Image (cartoon, rainbow, N blue to C red; front, top):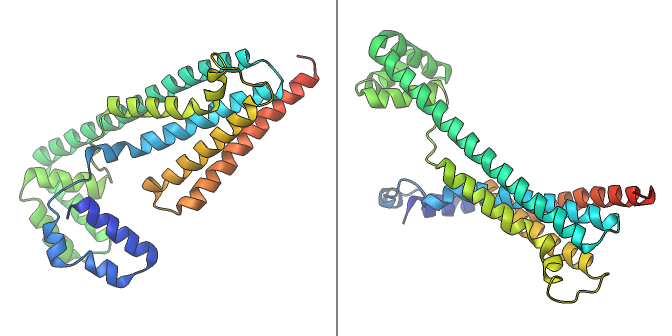
Length: 267
């Protein structure tokens, strides 16, 4: 059994408050068999995919709703919708790239600083680590014993300072991959509200049918992505799906109302 599967079993047991199942996931034999240190590499980007997709569908659906509320043509829907889809998608991708890159650079800079301080000020760094453990509730003797072990190896010492003093964990995500995952999810999910309007370029779509179909597709997409969010949050898929459907619907309703109001002004 891989560690990712064992953790999945432990999470399910916790959600059911099933002590027997939780004990089964924590036996010495099962723990010893989990040789895999991390989940699959792609699991790191689930958050980018889900939140990129949610933002894509909500913002595009809001544009479609606003244009529909103003009773503008399908051509206007496509122009504004596609412009929003590409511009906002690229903006989110750039944001994800810069965010991940900045976090990696900050982590690396702090690690280099800790390594330099350990090399030049070992007693001070050792005392800092002792105080950090004491602040967590360890006695003086316990903290000294732990620090004595961790400071035997410089790399392990730096790791301890990074985690316990600074609260910084390494992030293996690649900024470019995060950006591409975010952009792809934004593009695919954000295209759902526009699908029926795109089909209208080749197939006849009754004027009164396009927006209701867009609402249906967007609602299904919002619920599906909201439910998929449990892969990150570990919450109820039904509650998460309904919550996202309600929030996305509220945003679309506001956009529709603004469009309708502007139509009333003759704009």
